[in-house]
Amino acid sequence: MGKLTFIIAGGGTGGHLYPALAIGAELNNQEDVNIHYVGSTFGIEAEKLPAMNVNHTLLPIRGLQRSFSLQSLGRNALLPGRLLSSKRKTNKLFNDLKPDAVIGTGGYGSALPLYIASKSEIPFFIQEQNSYPGITTRHFAENAKTVFTAFPGVDIYLKKKTVFWQATRFGETLLMGIA
Image (cartoon, rainbow, N blue to C red):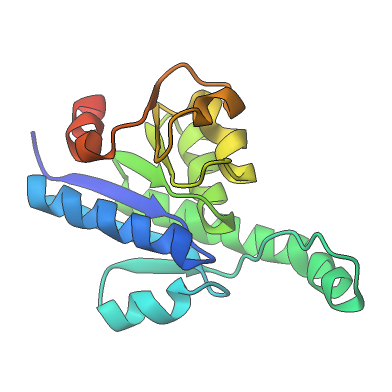
């Protein structure tokens, strides 16, 4: 098998970013791989990824604001433009990298890469570290090749048959899933 290229997408908070970094490190330990991280210019990854000097792309995307305030209304008004700009940037990234697989760790930073992977028939995987899956995970889980969870019982919230609750086997199971 030649060198595999992975896009690992997730962010907004450390709860999404640090699992992405751990997955990338594990994949690097097991194979000679090309890892490219994707996140948001508004999340913790905007500070952490450049400081780590890793391959990354930051999208100008921000999650839907669910509170009711002038600030939230203003941010939501900007969402369509940010979404369009982020989609263009993500399409270009996919065309340039031609990833073998995409891994989403949740958050709004992972939604577009998972969407484009699903439309491009690129295998994608989801790692859900919460006991109750977020919106992005719930939306994309059904078509993911595998969903990895940190807690037993998360599968009751997902429309997916292939759910693994065995984090120590993540890298091995993932690599078998694309081979």
